[in-house]
Length: 125
Image (cartoon, rainbow, N blue to C red; front, top):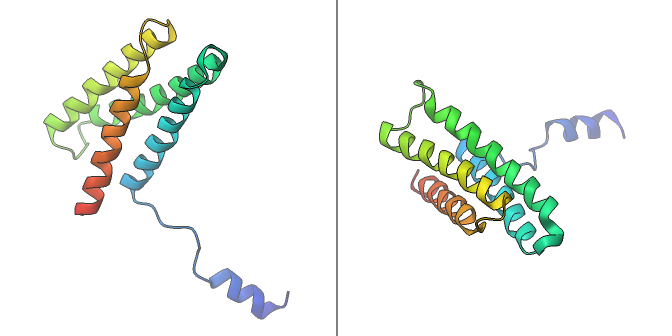
């Protein structure tokens, strides 16, 4: 490759899309929700995958809870409180799922609702 080709490659437009913070959040929810769904379909043989997916989901919600608990967070107080409550619910319900006392559907439904909200707000912006 000669210098001209290298320069063109270096300064060419990137093929990687630029993501907004909202888009990044959406992608994280989409990836984890997919893991939750696919691991749940495996039944008892997929319990390890289910536990891993629940762990990822808990990590995501823990980060969200920490973010909305920060006074510098720009979201309205009411929305911050609702997100914090969902994080607490998710943590508690995850414990029940891991103890085989509840199904995973509420976790998937919550994540899906959040994804819809992120997509709706992105389209309105």
